[in-house]
Length: 459
Image 1 (tube, rainbow, N blue to C red):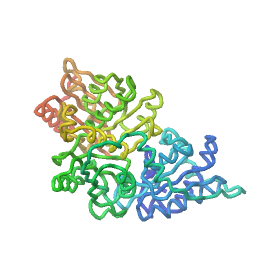
Image 2 (cartoon, one colour; image 1 turned 60 degrees about the vertical axis):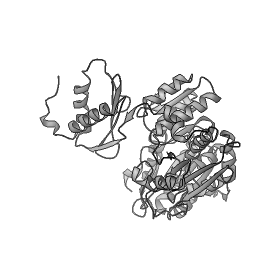
Image 3 (cartoon, rainbow, N blue to C red; image 1 turned 60 degrees about the horizontal axis):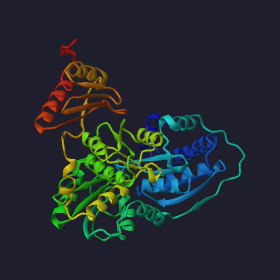
Image 4 (cartoon, rainbow, N blue to C red; image 1 turned 30 degrees about the horizontal axis):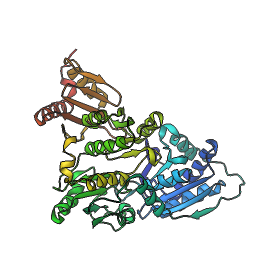
């Protein structure tokens, strides 16, 4: 087994060479052992996406669980947020078989405690990995029972108790499911809305014949942009492979900055829950903090990554959390992320107003951002040290290391973070003017992509 298959937040690897039925069985055994130690309930909810390998892997995992005397509820085809719904509603631990937005050759497992509480490297995944590596001694046990339960309609019912879309004006909506799980969940949700839906790539196909189900890459949104303009739609939605992330396109076919959607949802949640805490990650636009405070809330900054946001939501009783990567977290959804719930918030706001989406979001577009730019570097720490010595000396600049290196100026900021798995530095820049943003972006990129050994470091 490759040690790299256990990531920071989940398990993910190549089917057949890394992720096999034997591995899935061993992981099921290890997960059952872990749950017993943690005194978790003795039943595990298991969901699966549309990848060809998912049913066999889920079946092997289920056999591993039941071999240890625990029971399994198979909910069948599901989006990741539907699995979180099941784990929350039933108050049971869960496992979702998906590789999210990764190419077809991959699959993976996302695990959670009862109540949809996350399991990451620091909260149990390392222990489970060690159990898999060690092997679990076989003991004489009564086999657990596997049963099936379809929870799609209950999932939809719950979503519609959280966002009121009963009286929205008629809307025309284009949805690109990317041949992923949005093609399964979206029809069940949108048949209940006052909307005409134009479907793109709703056929469940884990080989992704049309484009990768990864909407964070702009090239995968081109089909949606064209369809929105061609059909005169009010809004376009793009889901990733397991439909836990959602990206928007406005009526002009322009991509919506995820921080603008975070700001919009924050205003709606604060209207329902005045004075609440809102979590945002540190590569979100400064707009988010400003909007939260303007609407009487408290904005709390987080590291990038769902385990950090979910932890802070639990600690601060935050009503909502948004990540610039398109993940949106809701207290009333067991603090889990749901792309569909974020989409419903956008649709409700649009349907309650006569303005087009671009006008509705205009107040949240206050700055110019670079988007995330990756650079291959030999030594990420050295590169960040060089940048800190250059920019940290400027008057009025604040430096912090919450997650990588963040340099805050008066009308601009940038963040550099090292990838956990690749020799990459990720740069995000934002400024009040496009010219300032581009200047900082280009200067930082030229420095970290240059020969750091010959740079004269500023003492």
